[in-house]
Amino acid sequence: MKKPDKLRRQLLRLTGLFGAGIAAKAVHAHHTETHFEDSSTHKLVYQCNSADHEYLDHILFSCGEMLRKYGDDIELIVAVFGPGIHLLGKKPGRAISHMQQQRAGSLSDYGVAFHACGNTMKSLGWTEDDLLDFARVVPVGVDDIMQLQEKGFAYLSW
Image (cartoon, rainbow, N blue to C red):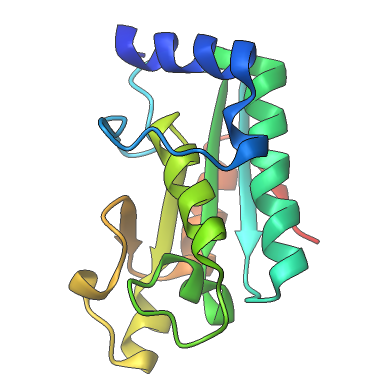
């Protein structure tokens, strides 16, 4: 992991930025295929397939809590597809709050990867330009989850 990412995560643990929804927008973490250059002991992929406000809050809060607990020793990916894709839309077609998008951006600043399903995007007529800057398009969201599990990621859905 790059040194600036470690500093951001240390600040996270000290200040609890995610609970306040404050985004450190100046610098985004560099993302590799899973988003860290070094291997972490813990690897977790969240399924995000709903645009329900409470559902999204739970996922975003859980990501922040996992970062606070494990710091630099966890890789987190949020696999977004179906109605959940609206979380990553510049102009969401569902009622996604601006605060939730800011929280997702803040999590991205701390190294959490957000994978957007290309199939869902096609069904909506979206292109990469329709997504927030930190989102990464994968061809098929469910296939992405399967491949991440094959690489040792635990899978979480609720």
